[in-house]
Image 1 (tube, rainbow, N blue to C red):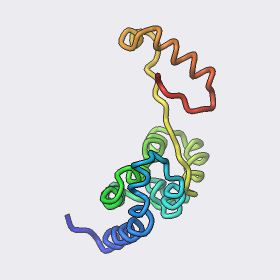
Image 2 (image 1 turned 180 degrees about the horizontal axis):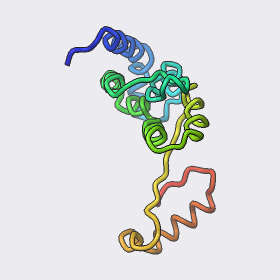
Image 3 (image 1 turned 90 degrees about the vertical axis):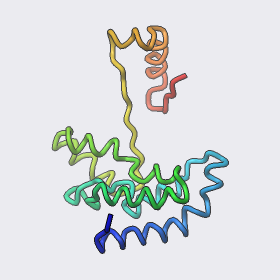
Length: 156
C-alpha cells in the first residue's frame, strides 16, 4: 500500500515518538505489568486516543488507515502501548453511529481533549442467557456489581 504525503508524515512522527517515549519503557511495562499513564497522557496530546473524534467536536478526524499506521508502528516496540492508541474506539464508534446528538455533544468534546480512558460494560441480560453462564454466577456478579458501584469490577 502506498501512503499519501500526510500519512507518511504521520507515520514518521509516530516512529520518532516511539523511539523517544515507548521503546525505552517497553520492557519494563511488560515485566511489571504496569499501566503506563505517561503514555496515555502523551497519546492524548498527540490525538492518538481520540483519533476517531470528528473535527466538529474538537477531534483530529482520523480514519482507519491512520489508526492502523499508528498501532502498527507502536506495536513494533510495545504491543501493550499500541493497544492504548485507539483505546477509546469501543466507546467513540458506537457513540458516533448510535448515540443521540445530545450524547455526542456531551461526551465527544471531553474525549477530544485527550488523555481520557473510556470503558464499556457488556451485560448478557436476564432470562435464557443465564442457562449458559449459570444462575449462581450471574447472581454473584450482579450482586458484586451493585456492591462495588463506581469501581472496576472483575469477574471471578
